Image (cartoon, rainbow over all chains, first blue to last red; front, side, top):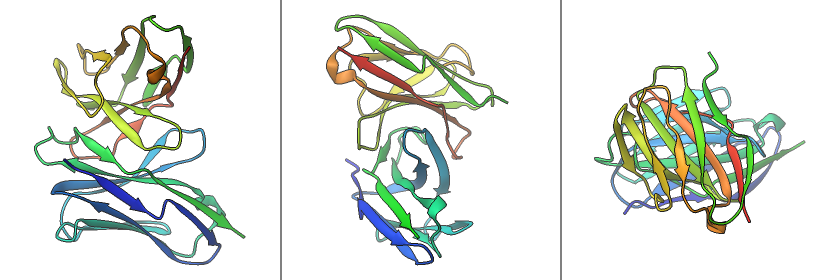
Length: 114
Length: 111
């Protein structure tokens, strides 16, 4: 059974600082997703990581995947207030009908303060 | 393109009532999903579909049913609503191995 754990669950940052959110998963997963959710809103897909060593970047966010360590990271560079949101990672089970059976972490609530 | 649309946006049901949550996408995606999100939690997959006529259970399918007669539509049926089904429901679609696109959600309360 795949379990996905994120840490930290809460993160308060100052603008301009760097930080990393970690996503550990318990068993073999062949894909890893990152999402953003603003309060009371729907989810926005950020990154899809499909292979060991995959790295994707968009703006101040960079995601990477290490399948051997069963770890994905979401790195935030020079945080700005607009990045305040809850970030979720989700892992996919092998053989789960491709993109079926995604298991979500509990989310990391990020607050960026001036 | 409208993307993924869901109706209704809000609904209050009495225990034992039934309802259908509608989901439509206009991006010609093969994959569609239904999730529920309880307060302060991540999403849990209820059902998903990899194409018209094909559906499969996710992590929490009990109390729900789905059908996929067309590529565009993926309705979720709640039978005999229970308070435990109070949640926000999100529909999503995606191409193969691509990013998921989410609808705005339906906030359901069962009292």
